[in-house]
Length: 287
Image (tube, rainbow, N blue to C red; front, top):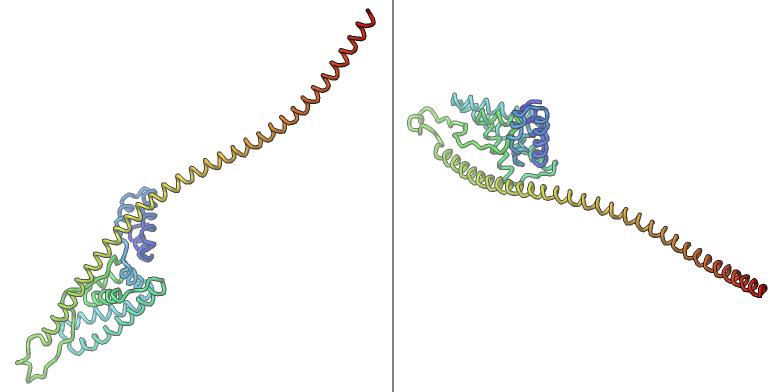
């Protein structure tokens, strides 16, 4: 097993399963004498629910994801050449492909018992948008090992409006620039809000994880103490049962001894009485 294989296995798991599985793999690597691999595995971070949901798209919906990323590749090429017709057509393809894949991710998450909130669906869309407009983001999404959702704050490819020839000299250099800048600013604002919310949630999750770890250790200690005392109770219970049995045996022996001693006493008194009578008779005979 190498780090790539370990990461592939771990990021296919749910966030709830991730930490325990990661620690187990790291322990396994350490036991095998590969300290560097163990350290690398421990450095892998647990994904958020949204990141996990997107990661599964690379495993469950590879064809749909490849189709969307291909649209992104062609869209970036058309943006470079300012091919307005291609940009318009690819923009429609992009919207449809993104919507299909977002629905698939949402449905899978719900089927797995981890439904996405409305803000979670927005983060899925933003991650897929980032993959469309940015080649590095596309690679990360295809790899399926995201730790958190992606966002793209740059200038996303968009259709260029082609003006009639007679109006081109009077047209602005970037048609619709103000609208695009306003939309980009709104996206950045929303992304900043979501980033703050994510950081807050991650912090709360980290604190909860620390508390869980502490209580897990407390639980282990309490369980050990409970098991030790239970064993002692069982030992004492067994000893008490044996002592009760021995006491019962001794009581029976005592009762038998009392009866036999009484009978022996009666026999002894009777014998003594006979002996006294015989002695008296002998005395009388000699007198």
